[in-house]
Length: 168
Image 1: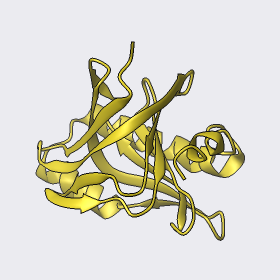
Image 2: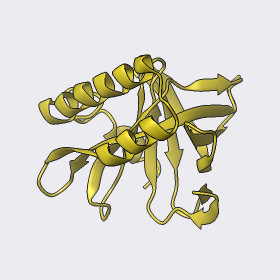
Image 3: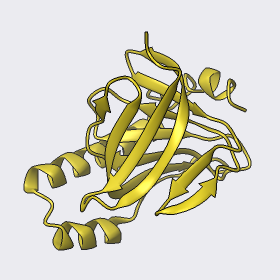
């Protein structure tokens, strides 16, 4: 029986801490594992204690090079996707991800889809010597997400809303 609580651990490519927080397992389907993070959740962000002010739902795909964060208002990003290495699960209770800097975001007010942090990706690619296959996978995931967030591809159109309603 899967645990109700999953620890989500993001690190940077050099192994340094990025984000770390508990989430409630909401469901698992053909898209991946849906995790809910209510407001008030204690977390760690860049090594510093933090508290989530706005709830969100995280989708961890089974094999994708990304994670999707789905947000309610007042957050200005409706969908925020981190480009990551594929999830590495430690049992059912912990998921490890390596954040590869690039982000694809859909803005709530305008629906604009944008690629962010290309400069950070280039800097870290050089500093930490990202292998060519990691670079290719990260760039391919970003290209796919740029289209998927704008064209009605699920889970980015409406399917996430039923999960988000459980944490808002």
